[in-house]
Picture 1 (cartoon, rainbow, N blue to C red):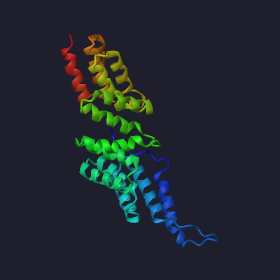
Picture 2: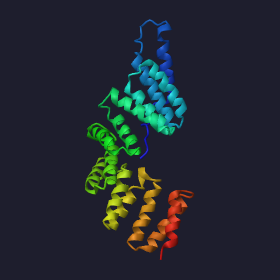
Picture 3: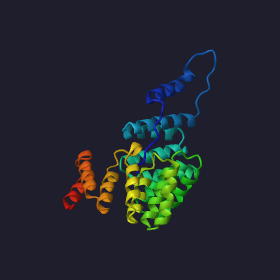
Picture 4: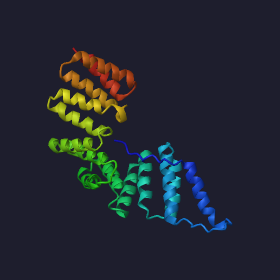
Length: 264
């Protein structure tokens, strides 16, 4: 599950104009006085600009704007959360972790930052620490992406071999966002496959690779494996060939070809 910022609907150019106009208010002659932006308001504008730049694949410019935001209001938790996302995008995972921890320290009820911190801890194998932060994120009734911490909690319990609890979290994630919970579908498919529930596994792997989840090569490969394990070799053969054609030069394509060569 990748970390990502929510796309901002307002363009970066608009924010630049707004920010420039706001900073110029004091020097403009006008009959009706305008309220000058506070430092926190200016900082939030820089954060929005940074988020937009990160969405556009420019983490360096995003970080520059976050430094500007920090100069305005260093205690704004959104700054540190966005910095965590930027450092994650640049594969600087230790700095990402530090910034996520800072965001949570400044705002313990900031559920999105709690979820990001939980994800970063999970990636480092610090499962027990991750659970507490993900639980906070999953318990927030207004968290629009609740499926993410729920899915990650499921992954943690899957790694702990607590398959019953993992299944409960995956199902909750899917129920909260049926079209977006790609990871939950994928891992729940693993649970079905483990129990030789082949049709259920194929169904969940299919859900993990359609619509919002399209492009999830590992889920497509898993469908072929489920066909293979259920001895539907013709369907497995077709799926492995499809994976190789759709995702050339990928690890999933390599695995598909290896499995294809061993089919009866």
